[in-house]
Image (cartoon, rainbow, N blue to C red; front, side):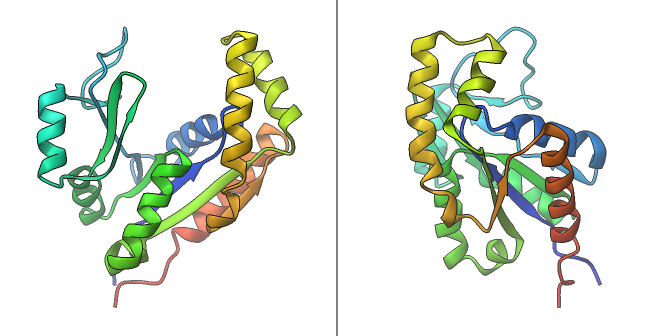
Length: 200
């Protein structure tokens, strides 16, 4: 009997290391594990490829898909729209491919709500929150990146505090330590979760 494919949602504040964790899982477990490719109306950045990094859509096309209920979740972020297409997830899960989605806490909340009314999604969905040990840990990591101004870092820290308040709504909390410890913990979680009971 086939195992139920997995849809693993990973959330956490900026600086928690969630993107690195997702990348390492994909590197080790591809092609059986693939990243959910989300849609956006923002223009591609240099080096980004349509259908690989994002599904790049014109705003009119994106909003038409919203009207047709083709998204699990969508939101306007800054000057563009972002969303997760149902077909992107359903087609791969139907092919017995496990999926990983790096998503913000609001998007994760939408998926949890949908899982309450969709028994198939409920069986496939797992949610994990990467919880930094402290705000200082996030601050240090953001400073060490050297990508953001002090003002931007402080803005991200305020957002991080609000996001961390949502941790108890997730099925699993990964308390961040070192990069290697975090990866071994999330790797073990994925291996356990992907051994879900077979489809009856």
